[in-house]
Amino acid sequence: MGVAYTSVQWNRQKKLYDFALVSGVAGFLAVFAITTKIFFPFITDEILIIRAFGVTAFVLLHFILCIGPLCRLHPKFLPLLYNRRHAGVTMFLLALIHAVMVIATYHAGGDTNPILSIFVSSPLTRSVTGVPFQPFGFFALIILFLLAATSHDFWLANLSAPVWKSLHMLVYAAYALLVLHVTFGTLQGETSPVYAGAMAVGLLTVLSLHITAALKEIALDQADNRSSRREEAHYSKSEIDLSLVTSAATENEFIDACAIGDIPENRARIVCVSGERVAIFKYDGKISAVSNVCQHQNGPLGEGKIVSGCITCPWHGYQYAPETGASPPPFVEKVPTFNVRVENGRVLVHPKPNPAGTKVEPALIEK
Image (cartoon, rainbow, N blue to C red; front, side, top):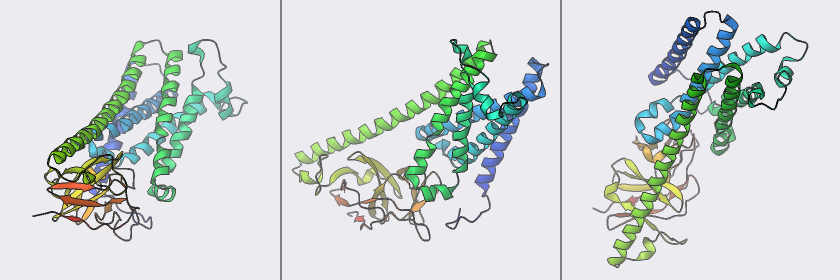
């Protein structure tokens, strides 16, 4: 992606990602079709296509939703995140084929408008098994279309990262609607417990991974806070000015963040300062601190490294100068910076962030 939104050639990683994605989808469709024909030899081709594309889209959505928490749990899953939007667009296209086939098969042959027929063809009943399930799928498809249509970086740049990210969090609303769509559809059309069991396994997998990742992040923040309090106690005993290390910092005070030795060369230590995650980088005998949140897709800058003098996000490679938090020209992304000091082998960070792109002189490491 160029700053002027000109097309670029796929690099090797993107080609491998898309090849694996297309191969996986094609393979799943083939296995599903063959298996279905074996166990249900009298199924019509139309119903087979509807089920094959619907199941494939739903399974792929589970895979997409699991990528985020898996990356938080272990960095080896980061390659899955690299082109995740391609998986999202592919999933929407599969769901669209499913929806078109449903409308053509069940709603296009009558006098009622096919879209209206989705809402009126199955009247409400007092039974749970009589709940109309197709409207849930219809609204989920609308959300998935919105996400696929705005997945390009053009929308990310023009909507701003916070708005774009908030918009794409609607994928969880779409997932909830699809769970209802599949659950009620299964109750009405199938009697085997296998389908309900598979649905439960998928839902529990998504929920458990998200909860586990969230608990890990909370534990890391709490560990940073406990470490900070221990260091404050140590400095208190050493009669060092507490105005530099207290966690209850005022506007003119700095917070003890970590030891210089805790930061690997050309990498960062992520600390929680006044409720905000800050990435403290060590490079070329200097220390700089920036917000941990990348302006592209809120990636964790502190899990990246310094490449060619720039902080490089591990998610998609966006770069920022450590002194200014600004991307190198002609790019215009900026992140907030923080004032830092180095005293007695410790890194002290001012809790108030500077405006995004503000130049801050790095703290020199004492030799």
